[in-house]
Length: 76
Image (cartoon, rainbow, N blue to C red):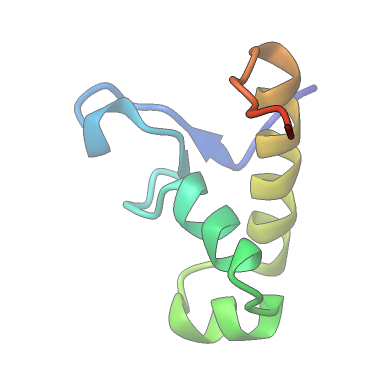
């Protein structure tokens, strides 16, 4: 998958994936969605973001979890 809006710069934000070179980490955007915020609310809080930034952040996160094993707690 090609991500045109996600940048990783070692000297910016500790090399965390960010949106278009801004100091807005993908994890922040995804976390806001996980907390129940709408795209409209996120764009209001971060006026430098565009709707496609939010969608690409979600696609990036989905791709990232496919690439790694995450420890899961099994129900007892």
